[in-house]
Image (cartoon, rainbow, N blue to C red; front, top):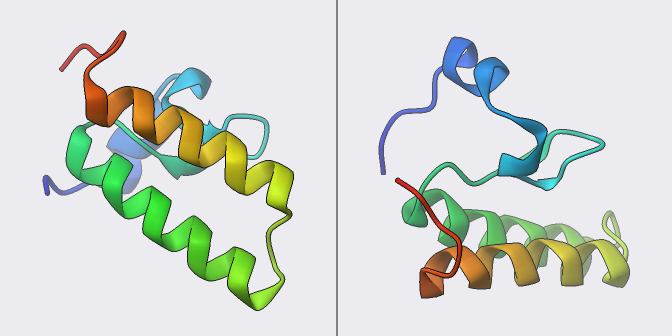
Length: 72
């Protein structure tokens, strides 16, 4: 997984995030997409993330992991 510095994270477009309105779960590449799925699931298991938000993160990550509409 490539390092995602604060400067690079701040430069990402909102559409790069699993939850763009909150700028949570950045997915600039496939490695980050897989990690976002895992972290979102952990937060949902703890009760800190709604099932609706988990589905949003999973859907975006799945599109990236499958290559649909993904540009490196």
